[in-house]
Image (cartoon, rainbow, N blue to C red; front, side, top):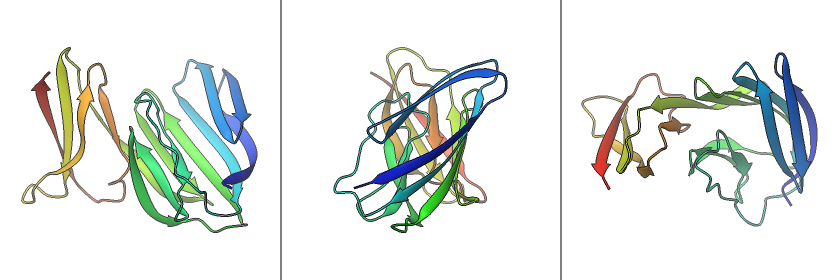
Length: 177
């Protein structure tokens, strides 16, 4: 069994909010002049889940879950990134999530400690093109593939795997479909 209970507090200035929790799944609709939303909640995991969920919607801004090894996993677009953050069972944990839709940035904290943040990479998409994102900590090192075959009209990549790096470089490769 995964997350058992949620204590929720939602804050966004001068906006209309809707938060729905159903079958341990939370969805949020936001109508506001601003683009940022904070979500604060507490959750407790009784035991490791029997299966890992997947995120297939490329429009997802932020997704995270506890995997079968009790590690926290965040999604960078639709690519899961397992963090070294271990989740204790039968302990309440406070999660703080900040997401700014205009700046394409988010961060995730547990009990007041930042455990993941998404660095945003954006581009102007062109029809009939596929995009591939690479990263390296130094220009003297080889670039490593982060995600390939990103289709039009997607125009962003959120990198949650290198948020703790002091420096880094991205390469965007474009192919004609």
